[in-house]
Length: 386
Image 1 (cartoon, helix red, strand yellow):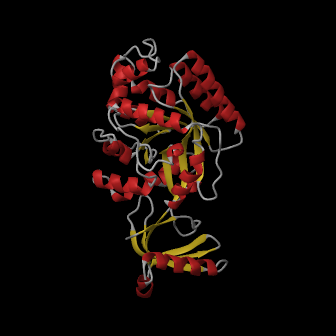
Image 2 (cartoon, one colour):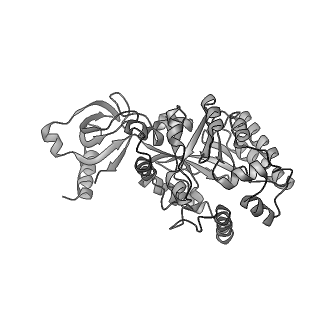
Image 3 (cartoon, one colour):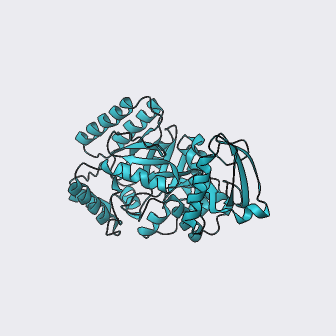
């Protein structure tokens, strides 16, 4: 019997026993901060796990060829690009990739939200129970299986744009005042004026919502902040957006981390080039979580990520897929596999939390992804073990 046939038969039997005590066995059970357990039987009733025990010899023969883990969490993506079949090129230099993204958006028009449903369905098919999405509109999508946190993106360097983006952000928060699934996203140091940044952080404090920002993503970003020169400076000049008063040099990633620390919770997305000073600051501010996107990091050809050092000193690090503009798909499980291959020094027991419990906590929703233990609710993801 093929693996799909085994799963289809199991699902039919599982549904037939709805309302009764049910037992099933899996090849692996893997909880965060634990080593995977081989050949495990779970007993369930009315959605609650009654007990977990080693499978008997007979049960081993009927074990589902799968890994059972808590619901997965994707801590950073842009679902508006879910229609793409392959990443946008060229990947380098980064400023040219940005130009290509701008052209794509212009050619597509204002139908990015059409991709929301496709993106959420792809997340669901990959076992994701919660996703953090960078949003360019005010829509809060409703999906039966995937909860989404929408971080309203803001980009603005000119006085007019600062006013417009500030108004859009406050409108979004007021419109969804009763939702726990909103946040703000000052895009990046090279696209957000200090005045706009300050306004957005003040709004996050007022409405008690999280903030997500792309930070320490490229060496070009660091050069722009440190000296006011480089490829991003030239890119901004070509768009008539460069102002030496905004980018005078002598600025650093640290000043953005200081502002993020004012928010109730914050995601520093990428962190590819955090230095020792940045890491020391993050140690002192655990409300800031770094989101590493392994396959996007590889796509852009960055130098090795400091994740090993970050975990060694106890920083919060979770994973995201970024978007299909820099990634072939939205599988957070494949991000974990990539991480395990290229950072083999990270203990197996520490890996899973970055796409389950730690990620859910970073987003302010720890109940979404909890360890599978006796007494917990039966909520998890089956990963085919082929």
